[in-house]
Image 1: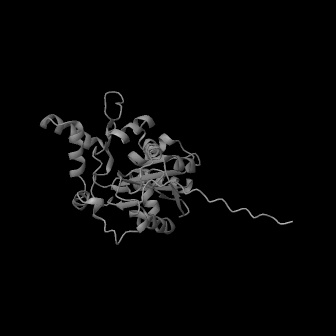
Image 2: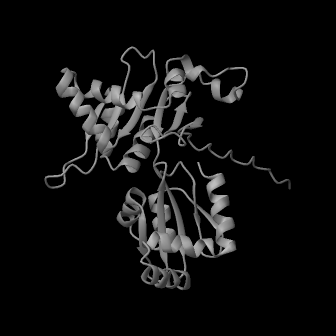
Image 3: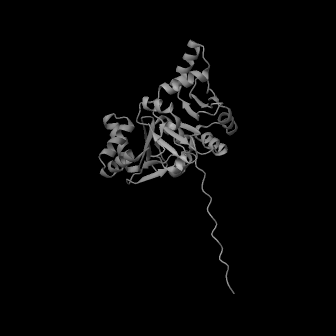
Length: 285
């Protein structure tokens, strides 16, 4: 009796959100962005889901924005505006790719002043404020088809899909951007988003978001702490164990240091941590 060999099932290729990534995060804020483009047809459901989770915007609202374009203004918390806006620019003719970006509070305020002073719409004001803050090189490339990419020098698989269909200008901790956290023993642990990071360190998602947005320190249940510095708009995180954190607290009290400065001093005195911090800095996006 012969056994019939079954052909192995082909694994489904996971959907791709971006196939073009260009780093401009060394530029001065607020133009320090990661250019994330796609040449294949847009998977609207996945695109909306990722942006919805990244920017805390309802899924249905995000779908409408990606389909029609427009502005999402974050709800006010009390009498203060604590967040800016999410913008999606869609060319109805389809000649230029879709663009999405987030306005911080300063950009949002600038757009409001422009709207009131020049009588333009808020969307037009946000366009002007956002694009003029980008690096001049990027501004020039955005005026060219497909960012001026040379088809002969780009991976054929990228341009096979055709022209760039959308570009997300990003600088957030989303599931599609791997970041490294320096651990107390010098290991670099890679995480891919708010939920992944929160689970790794046993903290809440809201605590994680606040840490990434504002920087600072966060005490942990095991007696250690997380320290986050915002460098060029990007969060850089290190974890310290109870011994290291205790030493930093004593140093802060003795020399009247800010806690971040005290933790940095502890790291400087630890050759293992210093090597890890340098590796994280050199390999971060």
